[in-house]
Length: 132
Ligand code: ADP
Ligand code: MG
Image 1 (tube, protein in one colour):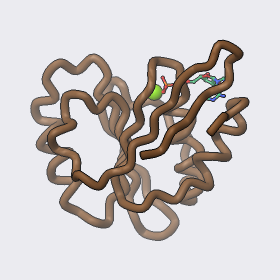
Image 2 (cartoon, protein in one colour; image 1 turned 180 degrees about the vertical axis):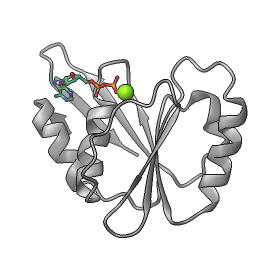
Image 3 (tube, helix red, strand yellow; image 1 turned 135 degrees about the vertical axis):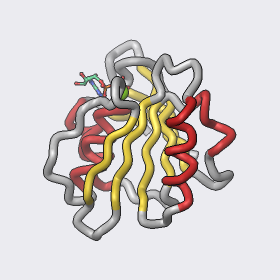
């Protein structure tokens, strides 16, 4: 799929319905992972603004349907340590919808059937999005 602008990425996120509760976002810095998450949060009825959780590693938001969106960003975290325990625990709770940026160090914890969204830059600034 080709995404032409930031707004289109927000719209894609807003209308994205995952088949399970865990979404892994793969793509370089600035590809649009957090932008996707902003749109996705809007679709879940979250009014708060979504900021990158790079320093806190995770942020939680209450969804309109009573579920909780948990946004993780493991960027540059060599050893996820305690946060991997936190992730493990949150993965057990079916009330959580979990979005993860930079999941390399916690890949082994993710359920086999999670959704992966891969975002790639194109030379013209558009993004190529693949869902698997
Ligand atoms: P990441 O979380 O992957 O590092 P961000 O979502 O934080 O990336 O940043 C993506 C940046 O690229 C934003 O500044 C956004 O405005 C810009 N942008 C430009 N075109 C697009 C597009 N087609 N899709 C997503 N973001 C885009
Ligand atoms: Mg980001």
